Length: 391
Image (cartoon, rainbow, N blue to C red):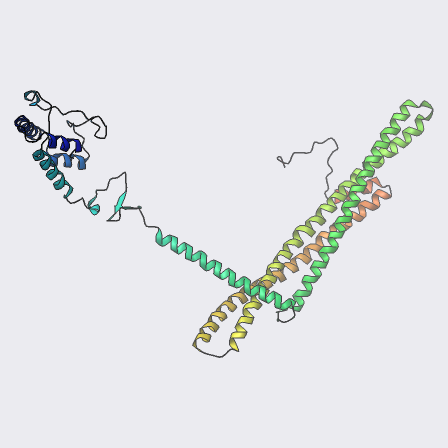
């Protein structure tokens, strides 16, 4: 805390009697200030405790180039400007050196507050309320193990598929079940073709009905404007309107037929085929683990090979249980699908035949009776179709 200007001033004026008197006066004033002011120990304790007290040096910027002069109670006794001396400078330097030699506070003894959290010993870091390191590492290990298992299984299944396509690998085949699955796929293709044709017929017949309605309206309008041909136009107008009414009835039957065939083909059969896909995937995985077990069994026997055989046998048994369960599910679904298909198509084919025959024979009563027999309700033309939100 020594000032270089202060040291220079003391060197220029040393040795004169007047300066010696000023030196004694300055030392006396400095002693009075130190005695009356707070001690260094009290100030340090107040700073460590967080208490801020009034200080005679408060509001003074020590870094400012213009430093204010300190006034002391005995300043009135020194009319001349204060000058320093080597004695006072040495005392201040000794006190500063003693303060610098004081041991710093220990980091481990720092107090914790509820707002700052817990300090971590001597490291100065923060420790959370709970240590989540174990749970995080366990979760990461579980994910890694899952990824490892999936990678191994995918590699084995891909190898098995390639070996089967190249004709180098063996596969498990259930001849009866495979034949039923192939029949189901062929049946779905044929029913999809029937659905496509029936939708085309319904669309074309709808256009015919709309054309008949427009033609009947045109005949009626010409009948009113042509008195000499009014009777002929009215006959044709009534005929077209009757055909249009019967055509709407037939359209209701065709839409009902198309809707049920679509449900059978794209929902019921597709659900069974999804189970078949799961069965085929399980079969490939089962064969992959079976091949691994067989290759280990014919390898030279030692302690390491025996442990691998036991592990492979465990995985093989697990896959065999899964494969047998899915094979049983496919068999049951194929049986129920065949029964459901016969019932649904028996009803729909009878409806289609009766409706087409009644319409093209001109038997309106038989056509209406067919719709009543199968509980088909036609929507009136004036009925407003509900929005998709209401549906």
